[in-house]
Amino acid sequence: MCGIVGRVGDDEAVERVVAGLENLEYRGYDSAGLALQNGAGLEVRKSTGKVQELKDQLTVESADGNVGIGHTRWSTHGAPTEENAHPHTNETGDIAVVHNGIVENHSSLRRRLEREGVEFTSDTDTEVIPHLVDHYYDGVDPKWAFTRAVRELEGSYAVAAMFDGEDAVFAARQGSPLVLGIDEDQYFLASDVSAFLEYTDEVVYLEDGDVATVRPEIVTVTTVEGRPVDRSVESVDWNPEEVNKGAYDHYMLKEIESQPYSLTNSIESHLTDAGDAIDVDVFDPATIAGFEEVQFVACGTSYHAGLYAANVLNEAGIRARAFRASEYQVAADPVSEETLVVAVTQSGETADTLGAMRTASSAGAHVLTVTNVAGSTAVRTADESLFIHAGPEIGVAATKTFSSQAVTLSLLAQHLAEYMESGTPHPELDAVLDGVRSLPGDLQRVVDSESASMLANYYLDSDAFFFIGRGLGYSVAQEAALKFKEITYEHAEGFASGELKHGPLAMVTPRTPVFAIFTGSHDEKTLMNAKEAQTRGADVVAVAPDGHPAIDETDAHLPLPETHPMWAGLLANVQLQLLSYHAANELGRSIDKPRNLAKSVTVE
Ligand code: GLU
Image 1 (tube, rainbow, N blue to C red):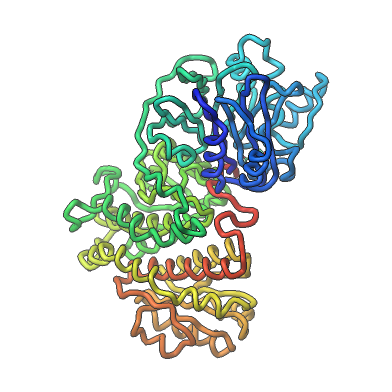
Image 2: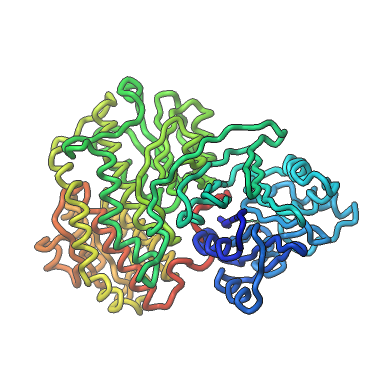
C-alpha cells in the first residue's frame, strides 16, 4: 500500500517520477504528489485522486529538477485530502518526505514536536518525519539528521527524503518494501521494481534497517547506526511489457488473457525439462519426511489458493488446513517442528501474512513462502521460498497470480505427498501431469470463449450472485465471489454447495443467479444442491465442460475444456474472472483500482 519513488540523475526527473507513480498506482490512489530539487528550493506538487490529476496539474505548470521523490497514497491516518497527501515537509519547506507504512508512535512524537512549537498542517502519521528530521538538521549533515530521526520511528516504513540544496535522496526501510534500481546514468528508489522496469532490471533489494544515500554519482547503504553494509545487485527477470496496458482498456483483462503465457512460466519452472515429472526444489526429502502436517497462511485471493492446495493435500492423505493470516496469530492450531507452514503471498510483503510467518517460526515450525516477488520480505523471513513466476500483476484484483499460485501449490502438494509419511502419491500422477501441461492451451480456449461476457450482461440486474462448489470447487466458489465483490461492488457470496440448505438458501430468489462449479469430482451432489436453488426460482448456471450432464438440467452454461479434476477448478475460475470483469465493465466500475482497495497490503 502506498507507492513511493525516488529518482536521481543528470537530466529532468519529473517524467520518470510520474511514470513510476503510474506504475505503482495499484498500491494506492487516494492522492499523489512529488517533490523536485529545482535549484531554487524544493518544489512540491500534490493532488487528490489518481496520478492523472497530478499529471494534469504538471502540464499546466511544469516542474523541473534532476532529483525527485513521489508518492501515491492509500491513506491510513487522515482523510484522502490534499493536505494529507505526501510529500510532507518541515515548516520552512526545505525537507520533503514520502512514506509508505505506519509510524506507530506518531502521537507521542507529534506531542513532543508541538511542545517545541512545531505547527502541523496534516492529520497524517507521516508528517512527524520531516519535522523530526528538521529537529536534528544542523544545515550541514542531512544524512545524519535523517538517520537520527529514523531511529526514533516505531512501526513500519519505507521512507525517502530530500533536502533543499542537496542533490540526493535519503531512504530507509523497516517492514515496508524498498528497492533500488541501477541504470547507467541514473538511480531509482521504489516500493517495487515495476516503477522503473522500463529503464533497468538491475536492482538492490534493501533490507530492514538499511539507510541508502543516493547521489548522482554514487549510492551508499549503511545501517541506521551508520555502519556500511554490502547489498548485492540482482537482475529481475520480469518483462517490462507486462507493466504496460498495451491495447487493453484494463490491466485486469490483459492479465486474465495473458494467463496461458504466465501459467506456462509457472508450470515449466516446477516440472523437469522433459515435463514428465515434478521438479520442486524445497527442503530435502529427509526434512519433508519429518513433516506431519501442513498449514497454509494467507489473505484474500492467496488464501483461496491455500484452500485449494489444502484440499489437494487432504486428498493425498495429508493433514492440511488453510488459515486466514490475520486470524492466525489469534487462533492458530498449535505448531511444532513437524509442521510445515506455507505462507502464500503474491507480493511477499503482505503484513498479515508476514506476522503469521513470524508466529509460526517462533513456535518452531518450518516456514516456506510461495510468492511472486524475489527479494521480498517473505523470502527473507521464510526458511525456504518457492516462486510462482507469474510476472508483474498490476490490476488490484488478483487474477493470473491465483492460477499460478494454485498450480504451484498443487505441484508442491504432489511433491510433499511423495516424501511425507502420511502422503500417498497421486494414483493418476501421469494424468495429472498431462492435465497441467495442457492447461495453457485449455486456458486459451476459455479466454477465447464469449459466454462469460454474454452472461454478465444477461444477469447484470440481479440482486445478488451466488457461487457454489464442492472440494476444489468450493475454494473456487469463494474466489469467484471475492472477485465479483471486489470489482463490481455487487453482493456476491461463495458457498460450499452442501451448505446452501443450511442457511444461505433463504437468500435465494428468482433474482439471484447461482453459478455451480463442476470439477468432475462430487458433481452429482453439486447438481443436487444447484437444483434445490433452482426449485426456489433461481437461475442456475453450470460452469462445466461441454457435454456435462448438468448442462441439460440447468438454465445456462459457462463452458470449460475437459481436463483432470485437479485442474478443472482453475479453468472455472478463469471463466468466472471474465464474468466479474465484464459485469464490472458494464457497470462502469473502476476495474483496475476498485473503490477503497489497494494491492500489496503492507499494513495489518
Ligand atoms: N500512513 C501514511 C498515510 O496515511 C502512509 C500510508 C500507507 O503507506 O499505506 O499517509
